[in-house]
Image (cartoon, rainbow, N blue to C red; front, top):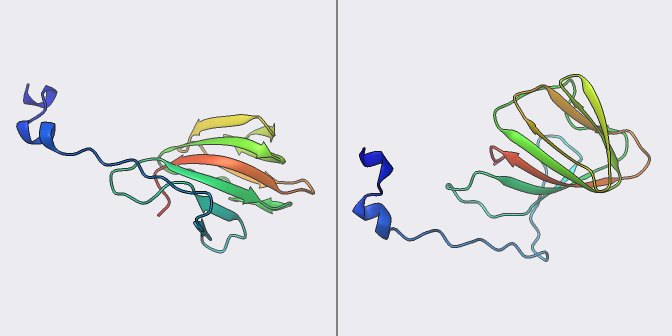
Length: 129
């Protein structure tokens, strides 16, 4: 029964302040040997679950091949360009204004098979770093 009611201590603990990330901050990271440009859109804190990223995918690059799966979920909103998502062996071509949301436990991969870069707002769980 006690799990349904906050403890006296929990009621008085301060809530973490929101973290503001300014566009002028250099928060770009490289992950593994990828040539993708990842820009972190949120600060690091142990109590945060979502990983919001701005990702630029260069033409003819494959993000993950072959398809793989992991814990969590993914949401992507295409800001510009075009990407091919393959989720559970089904192909989805997404263009600017399109989005996709799926459980990451399903095998998936993404690639830019066009001649132009694609910019994507990506929100993942769990966090990358």
